[in-house]
Image (cartoon, rainbow, N blue to C red; front, side, top):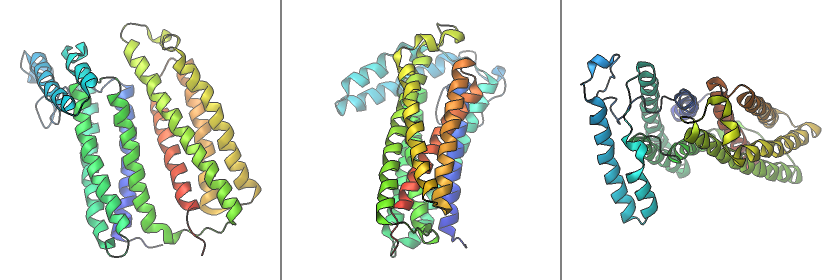
Length: 342
């Protein structure tokens, strides 16, 4: 199949956004989220320093004061919108006043994250520009691409809030969930423009069965994703006061619920693939069903490794990227199952 400029750009942007989720996972798992204590610059520079001697003696005080000033503005906006409790939390969280020591590795890890994010922002905008050719034939492609631009802009602002609040619980999870929303919005646009390459030949009953099973699986995967972010936030809250081997034992019931809930996804994912296999469905549906069940077991394995080996960073990244790929695979399968055969 020969792809046009929009199709190539959209697919590239989807893959690049998934790569950004991988980089974001590296940032979080290595504790480099505050490697740059300001935004959009890093230690006040567009290209960050490599040694603390390149910074003024009072650099910690400077960036703490900047964060406090920005949070005061954010709290003002939230108060105006009626979110008084959240505004109070942002303005009075003592962590905001914690100075960040310069660490070259963490700084450049976070800088790489921002650099990749900036490149993807340009790709998202390029996707919108190239989508204008569809305005007359299929407005939804252009509209979805425009929505992706707006969401990406909001995501950039949200990233600045994550930094200014010194990784306030909840903000990182929202940041990650928004990244998944963006990648699936882009995926929808790419699929709409390439759906003529996909052929589906299923009877109505089988299609309906597969569709609603996938809907249920996507819903449960999303719930599991949210619980996973809560587990991570609970660990973030205790990791500075409790030794690493004792993290899981001290984060409450959310981990036990998260772990047990995974078996529901295993059962439903296995059921979905059994339908595909028993009905000898081939092509893209078979590949997505197989990819989904493989990803589920990778997630189970990564989760077990996280518990046994005391949350090693490599498995944190695998766990995060794995769920992102699962959500995309399930969403793409839903789009394919909605295609008309006539």
